[in-house]
Length: 160
Image (cartoon, rainbow, N blue to C red):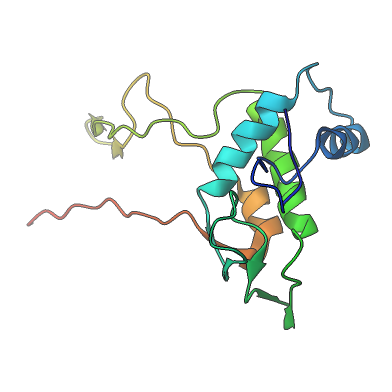
């Protein structure tokens, strides 16, 4: 069951089933009959983000509402969730129709192919592996509200 009351100890979503339905309908997206798991998977993803500001209350179950969040030079109200966050959850819920949003990360083998007289190509994805999904549209809509999920840079050096 979805609970969007951000002042409740049982809050588990920013977007309601009606929010998701309206979002999908405007975009001509067909949703499955049961949308609760989609909203929860989207919420799990959002709760993994690093947000601007601090939680409004120490014991609140979700990251929003927040204090000390400034967007476009205006401080956001402490008792609400920005529309961008609700929209981002709906976007992620639609993505969740196709599969998992938070896949396990495995270090793929480096694969090198060499063709004599041509170019040597090195891939960081082994056969059968896939990339960890990213959602640039969600990142764009959240803008300065979310500081990201952290990052890593994989690199190596060789002596010539």
